[in-house]
Length: 294
Length: 250
Image 1 (cartoon, rainbow over the protein chains, first blue to last red):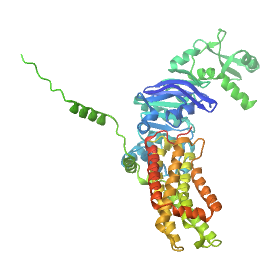
Image 2 (tube, chains in turn blue, brown):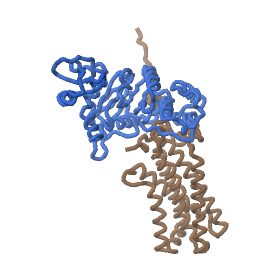
Image 3 (cartoon, rainbow over the protein chains, first blue to last red):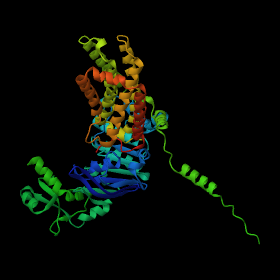
Image 4 (tube, one colour):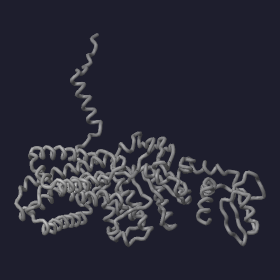
């Protein structure tokens, strides 16, 4: 079990994360938060790329920093900005990472073949990485993270650059892998984790806001989420008086999904993870939009 | 009825058994050299020195620059007027500094750093082996340059070589000590730059007195300093192998 105990991370006077407590057992954990909330900092601490200012992170009861190479031996990590050697072929690069992971050449070659097949790149082993598209590179990144058959897999924005078909394939892969290992997946795209994560972790104001199964998280909006269709002329007024989560244009009208405490002539709908995410991070979304468009 | 006699072990046997349990139960702490062999066996030279072509190119360029500068300045100051001992003592750590700067310090800014840093044999582990080889390379190259210079000028090659090793190990041990202690507030590479600057300033101010001072210190003192600094250097290197807080980002 991987555990985060009262972890705080500060960069001089700036506090990136405060008093974080988490427990990871087998399964997929989705780390959801807007950009800049501290997801990457948490992930970097979990892979010993950076260290907590306070508190500790333990694996099977031992501090991961003290475990050193024994911890890294069971670790697979895909960073947000995945670096590679442009002049290397996919196979050469993966053989290099496999060597650093302590795999012998024969075993590594076999594993590379398997993984390239799994990620849908069986015929590119001998092609140079500089010729790869963003999605192909991301899949090579996923391969390198899984080379050592890790017990703890940490993936920072792994679906960036993947098309819908690749995303679906990736989700299937994670569901298979999650049976006997810990997978922590950070994203700001809710659909990446919606159907596969056993537990969702949300970070807000540098702290863990929620860490619970999706079904429980959805209860936050139970009986409070509605949908209604409005003519465009009424939309502005409605936005001003209601907490609107999403809007969809349909037949010259607008279908609005919103949160309300009182009932009205609206359709009650079942909340999804995306609704909860939009509701929880409403202020962030609004302020970022203000910055973007204001 | 006679009771069964339980054969309790004596104190000596108990101590032996306890020590054996501890020895077998606890993970053994490998020595630096056995760790080096494990790395070479599991990772392989090819991957430890993935950038060997770049290293070779940098090394040749650095030697050419040093030899070129010496040849150029020899047209202003004849070889015979050079105090080769002061030059050896001053410039010996430069090659090591160049290698460490380009292939260790700069490597931390490479985009692959994060992937390499979370592998079983991470950048710090490999750095220990690489720096050990860099110091050997620097020693060989210093020797090579001195032999080339001895064709032009008459001096005691062995003494000059001893001076080279002394300054190389003083600088490399200090470099790594600072690296482990406080690299946030002080860039360790400045040790090597500082060493060269300090010696050039001393030579400029004191002139031949400085050169004579270097030559009057007994061999035994240099040898003792070299052995102590080499020991400290290996101790600092082994910290990379046994300390997981290596070069992580802060």
